[in-house]
Image 1 (cartoon, rainbow, N blue to C red):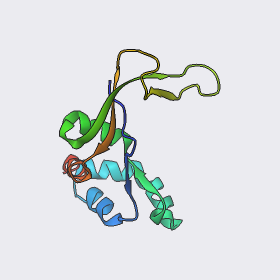
Image 2 (image 1 turned 180 degrees about the vertical axis):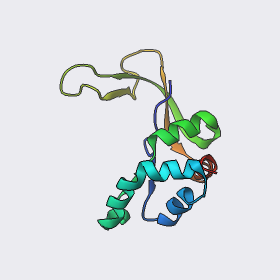
Image 3 (image 1 turned 90 degrees about the vertical axis):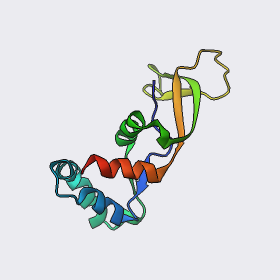
Image 4 (image 1 turned 120 degrees about the horizontal axis):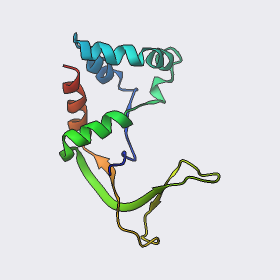
Length: 125
């Protein structure tokens, strides 16, 4: 099982990389622009692009599946998703092994962002 990264965002404050990423004249780049248009317009028109990050959890999961050398640090742990109570839907990570269960998740803790950005760029070309 694969879990997302603790940090799966890229800063909008460096907007040149985002516009380069979606700026290719390809159907794939156009699809990304169409999907994200309203969100990107809202972020930039509000002036919040210096405070908000581009959340890329789904893209990161795919990049890791395609090229696991993107991962620079990970840990195998036991995790479960709460199904009842106030924390229903939240993932519980057994960081200390207190549950004494077999590891079922490779939790990605850090990635090589340059490699990741190259994978993103290659996906829309």
